[in-house]
Length: 264
Image 1 (spheres, rainbow, N blue to C red):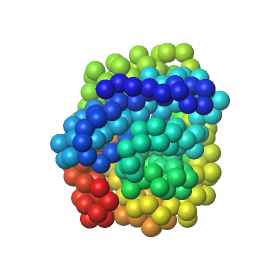
Image 2: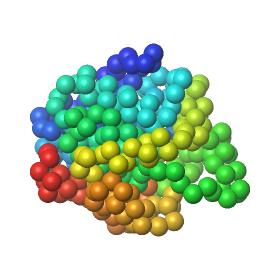
Image 3: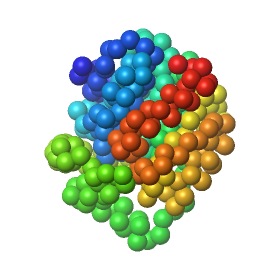
Image 4: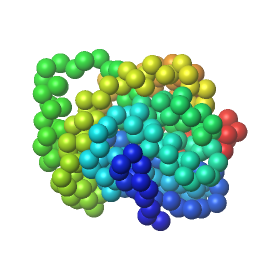
């Protein structure tokens, strides 16, 4: 069911399966929207979970223009949504940019979360890229077809869904959407990284084995899991979006972790 709520002078859009079972809140990464979870939602629902997927501020059907697009601002939106739903502590599933969001949210409102899952996360300050990579990043944030091509290249087990590709391109064509993405690219992850020591919620770091966004995805997963006192799982063959490429395998990994920790 499509829904929305007003928060911090904007509108946040979300879907809610309203199924019985523990709640899982899924946040997409930068430059995509909640549609990315379309293959993943039925897998979690079939395993007994209620799933909510939320568009980030600036993306999808949420308002385009905000004064703050930082990972911690997105965390405030997620916290506000969970309090609005009043459905008990939730599992937070994040991807890419919102890995930092998961850290901030778990530190800020631990009572709202039974576990946090960081999939292919940018949750820390990464080494500065070389001049060529910096120029490429600027181009991606300003030229919509380049971003769409790059997004599609992050799928490794199959091609990106053509319908999702068209929908994403159309969404990013709307005024303010690319500017929001540029603001996210310029966000300072150190604010969230500084709170890693505060996180006491069980943490799972999921990494796609073939994710081209990281020189060594497994090593990045181990580093973050160690800092967050969590665990790590590598999804074989997957790229940057395991939940969309291999939703069944990803759901199996998440549920196994949750059952092992007896949190949901």
